[in-house]
Image (cartoon, rainbow, N blue to C red; front, side, top):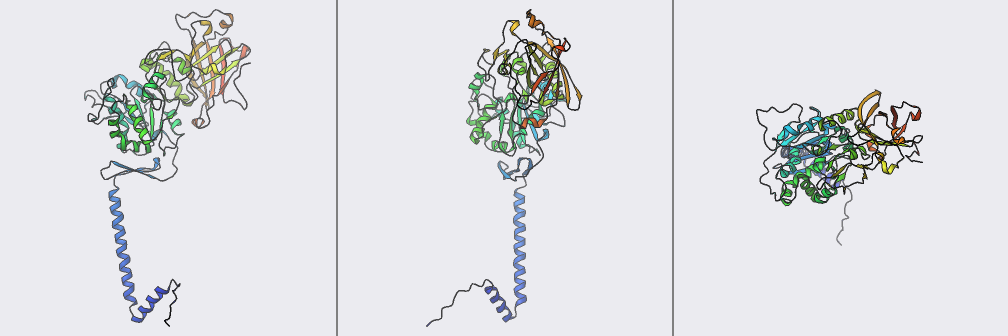
Length: 507
């Protein structure tokens, strides 16, 4: 009967056998030398492999701020994104690259808008021109630096009433990305007549994880524009922000996508259409203002939504923000207040003087209104319609509610405009607003109205910290401090955080 050998379960048996046989043959030294040779060959092979891999990755762009590495491989057209998951410093202005669509012929007439907010050696980005500026005209020191856009004539453009510059401007985000600048989290696009408010832009963008794919901006104020150009689109003049990872994906598809949407009108439409192919929707922020209105923007700005002021656009097409001055002078006045307290600029607060039956509204840094009667909060937060629609100059419709501005002077508020603002202590401000009388509007001669003809509204407030905008939004409260016993020429108002269980409720 044959002997059946049981399988061995000793994991060292094979090694023992080798050792036994080696010892038997007396060849231990030979075996060790062979083992060392094999290890040496393996080490050299691994070194060569990783050296080759490093050489092929020489175009990698280190981008820790976008949660990984964005890189080019081969012909540098294929983009890769590697997630690292590390945490980094808070978003600041140095993490933003601005791409401003401009023209060499018109820049000298439009540059003052950018120079209001651009800070050399602090803000980063470029004005993208259609051609190199004339050599005999030195580039202004206060303007953003310029780049000349690539030739875009190879792309199709079939819109019958637009201009081909829409193709060139749509590619600004792609050309900005391909510059390979370091430490970039966001690309922000705007027009040469867009006025940005950079600190507030940072406050908005820092709410979002820049390592994710985000497309942020706002719609038009005029419904007719939103219908024509899509509600799902960020209007480019008001500014739009694209996170670095999304820009990486957009660069991959943009050029082919532009030809697919050759019939579209503008650059912002093309960007949105291409982002829809990637599957990223618009995240709306109420502080981006396209200003697609005609007439007087006063009502819109005096009842600003509870959101930081990020941008203003189309300011050549509306009346000056402040009376008795040019638009540029008006913007300088607004920005002088903005520099004192960026987050509070245009933020509306309202309160009541129940002894005199007054309703008071303040849009900080811009205007104050006194109504010699009581209005509800719903009415006070609704903009007075001092403007018309963009395309048809009609009284409606808008993308928000409005209330009519009565021709009867006794049914209008008494209006005050910013006179000055100053810091009066650590983190505290005092702003003053002087009464404005529009000509040739006749003043109301009703007794209760005349009693409200004060010369000045003084407003004290604490600075609004940027982190306030990361909380659930809530309008701040105010109270009238001097009542009927104060100076007849002025009313003193204090803006503050609302107390627990406090509401703005008329009797």
